[in-house]
Image 1 (tube, rainbow, N blue to C red):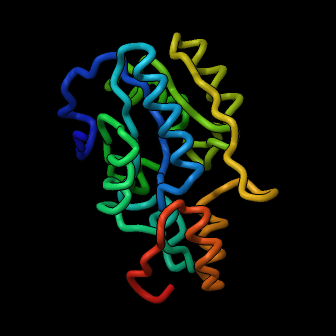
Image 2 (tube, rainbow, N blue to C red; image 1 turned 30 degrees about the vertical axis):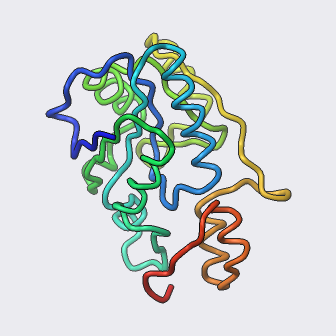
Length: 193
């Protein structure tokens, strides 16, 4: 798997099929997205690409909160690679970057720099300034700009969707059985959460 820090020195990637997100923990919900991503890339003879951020956006936007990441970036990259992804672009997340609207992100990053063929996203996906870009308006904007969108059904755990926030809750409770079940691997606590 190729890892690119930033987007300015990217080589030309063939028909990039892209998923965007923090991918913190690379849990079963993320695994489903990455499975769809690699399958879609295979179907169009393209490159499966994950765009993620470092540091995690919440650490920049909510300094001093009790937020913590599930894994460090290198562990998340290793887990993404295990899913068969071709390339990861790690974008530096700053206060200035957080001001970018979802329209700017689609036009400047996905289309302008990456020349994306397809965007893969789940029903709760959001990005852009104040997370104003949500599934429906991102999808409409992408389609208006000839960028295909593939919808992914949400991965459920009992009656709840598998989300990093829910996993963090269970880490705080030290409910390791549930944490491991939602992650799909054994969580190794690097420090006391």
